[in-house]
Image (cartoon, rainbow, N blue to C red; front, top):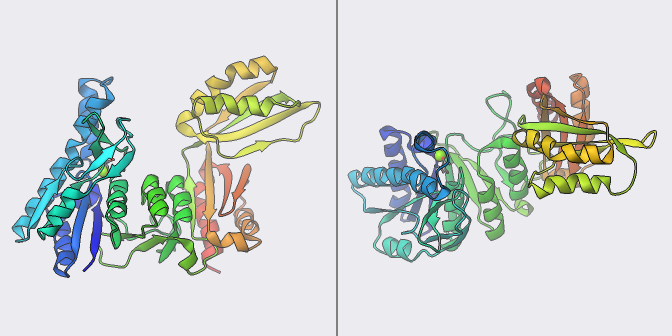
Length: 402
Ligand code: ASP
Ligand code: MG
């Protein structure tokens, strides 16, 4: 007998038919003699709708009340799923985050899980019940309801799996797994059999949108193997695990991020300390910088370009206005018509020429590269936004079709 944690996202429980579909997956797992703990998110667009309702009443509402509001979405889905399972004739109980032992920080709307005390869950499993837990929520030390940030129920599931030493943690969603590229855009995209935590993290940050980043970080920390699979199509999914046990693949995916902007500070005096000053201004405001490029100086002037996420670009520009003035730089320019394309793969650590192959694909497609950044398992390039989809396809073809 095993302990299995199964998580179902909002689209998997969007309506009555889908709730029963999930009930069947859960009860089939239970019928095989397993203990089953199920984590669900709010149905369909419920969370967005609740947020909109709150906005209508008071756009400046306190975060405490906003959490109180959105946590309601999961209360609906856990009870509906439990009712469906009751109807199929199985013993079941639904639990809110606090009942399931989720203790969190008191950072409303983006609380961190401090610990999960699964006493109640254990008691219910001992009574042979299927346990349904509300994802995305917990309780602060002040006994207030908190939520974990958007997409937080993946993390709830991994936290339970870690706290209870589950044998398996399955993340059911509306795609069949993790793909080598967005399957809606790249027709030859393949489903990966497995992927390492680090690769998954790189892909998740770059908008592969299958698993919440924090859930992958937590899975890595506690060495919890995750299986990402579809609740609608019966097929093996993708296993996310430590890389040592994996088949070697050169690269595991191509991702695109169009929510990025390039800022360039032009005509910075070529003297020590000015890069430091520039980036400390940004980090003081918690603005993350990604790719950085400094030109070789000429006439005692140089340019520094860097990328930030598009929604912080305006702020970054404002933050640096004084700096530009004070050091006597020429100007700061912002370009939002850019996209970041990245290839990710644990295999590149031991293979030369991976970046070259990527550049060749872009050259063949006559796409100009503006900036380049590399890490052990990732190569990113910044290009014109209008070329983004073409670039992904060209690079994907190069690596996966030959
Ligand atoms: N319902 C929450 C959200 O939409 C949590 C989740 O889906 O994981 O963000
Ligand atoms: Mg959701």
